[in-house]
Image 1 (cartoon, rainbow, N blue to C red):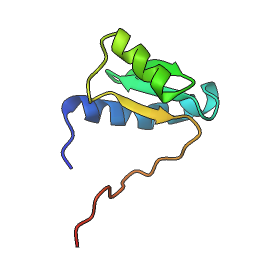
Image 2 (image 1 turned 135 degrees about the vertical axis):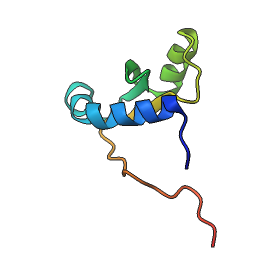
Image 3 (image 1 turned 60 degrees about the vertical axis):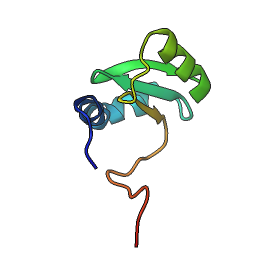
Length: 81
């Protein structure tokens, strides 16, 4: 899978910020990473989406994670046999 430069930057930032997010944001909180830094957070995905849209961060390159969830380094989203 090829990532855009923004997506790659935000993926690297997530790996770097993972412990900070775990410490500073309660489980279930949604956190957006844009431009390689935490850009916003909210108690629900819909609230975060609205906040991002209002601030002009509508890019598909924005990484949204849920605090307290362990994401694998790699995952197969769609596998063809």
